[in-house]
Amino acid sequence: QVQLVESGGGLVQPGGSLRLSCKAPRMILSTFTQYVMGWYRQAPGKERELVAAITSGGSADYADSVKGRFTISRDNSRKTTYLQMNSLKPEDTALYFCNALMPNTGQNYWGQGTQVAVSS
Image 1 (cartoon, rainbow, N blue to C red):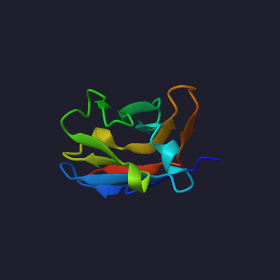
Image 2: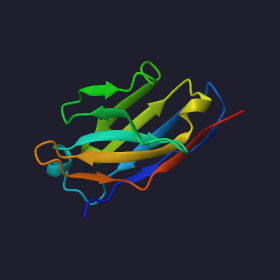
Image 3: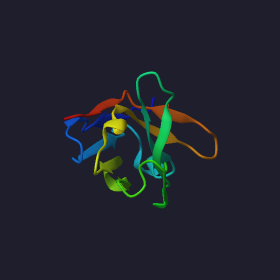
């Protein structure tokens, strides 16, 4: 059973920053490096959407709404994925989920989510 543990959410004012972390404590390191790691979010009444994803080699992709403000990264030695969020806006308010996707098989796993609220 793959376990993904998110942390770092909270309440922040518009224009502020947060860094989310996603750890895979029980995953074998050699397996972790094969996963595409992603961050999704779901706001109340809306569908879950992809925010950013990063391959094992470090290639990253972003939703248009966060380009230039968010940065996804991974530290394979720590089996951890990060999402640095800058210039936060109220519309970034959502429950943020970490996802691990094995590209060859389509097998994927989700964390429990961490809440981000952007409000003055």
